Image (cartoon, rainbow, N blue to C red; front, side):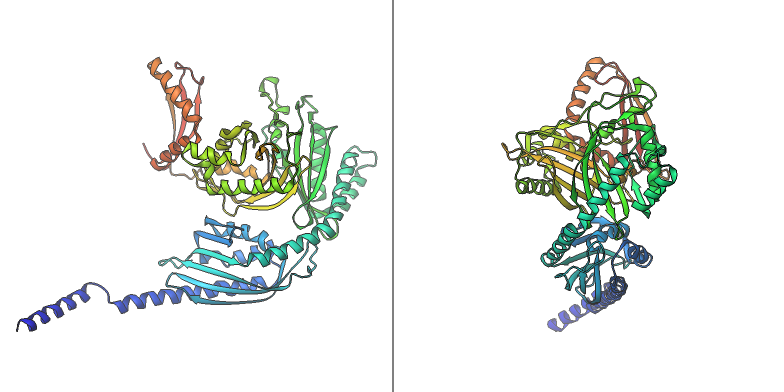
Length: 591
């Protein structure tokens, strides 16, 4: 009887337990339904992708497909391309297309197949097979690049919404890189040579004044010359922040007429008798990279920079030999260009040159300098340079950078002046990286490198950019040229200059919070009460300003509390009797 009674109790308990929670078969059914839903969605996505793949994957195709695919993706999702060609923990669909476009540019697919299978209720595995051939910059098939390329995708879905939260795309990078190298060799050998001469034709005509409005050949001849050299859809991009010349410096110039308008502006604004193109190099897809310098004098004010301003030109041409785009990347010395047009001499700040590149102690072995550059990129990407522990960060920097190194990354941002000074030594590199840690750089990629005229590595970097404090992303994909020189004596990087791309002009908009922000602004005036305590506060403040990692932790704590400090404006820095004005913004309607 006791055994029967115990069995009855156990059975009753099992019945009550099944009444209070779903059975195993119910959970399994729910998971199966979820997996089936995800599989169907994944197949639909890859059906669309296969349609897209059967042709040349260019920007226009991405625009067309953008109307179909975004709804499948979460507003922010994790991305892997390669890996290492475009990895990010948080991107939106637009950023993904910007990252993917240059990777698959000039690849023609003739056959596209895919197969999707369930990994678990949250993830689907998709194998996409592409029979493809690489094309050179003129659309010709590159010998030795035809084959079938298999791409494995692990696609993760949100359990509730069914939106894609992970897109992990990997493939055989060795085979892919070999095909890319063959394509680059064709572009360099057969296309760059012609484009180099066309670039010199443009610069020669400009230097001779043939594009000037008052040239002796007349208006009609300069228009004919511009129509001969520039495509109808040509774009000149010289954008650079300006206070006194914003209407001319902050716009794009389209078509042959646009190039003439830029020439008119430049001629009436600057005299540049020493304008020099030092060297040209093959860029991606046969485009021309040109480095040079000039010493500008403002025609109206007669002010001149007491040093040279460096530039990099990035110029592309179409199959017919007409210039399709011309982008200007100003060196950090250009931060003083705007001051030449200031209304009064009092408005002209001190002009600080970039310290010259070393000429004697220079590592001439390009491969050694390139290896240092690549090591630097890996260390920076790992976060080692911005470690919270100061000694740990400086130790990592010391493995790559010379103790006396110079870093000049200046740019005239109206909202951020953190890097508007020449940085020196390991502390300077640490400060640079601490500022960069305030941004996310999804899809960061070293596009190509070249050997510069001063033993330097010239590298074009491309990336998307997101400002962490405002959570705003720059709509344009950003790029810049980085030039580094290594010391032969120490075997470390000793000189670095960054030429920011014209697209960076949109940064100020990303740094300024949206007008629709639910928060409020507060102007706070701090007035010293006790001079001794104020002096002690200044000593502590100055110490924190010299410690970027500590300062970053302070900022992060402020973000957590829902506040952001836009400006810290002492009437006189370090004066224990002077007031300080601060501008704060709250994340919501705090009182």
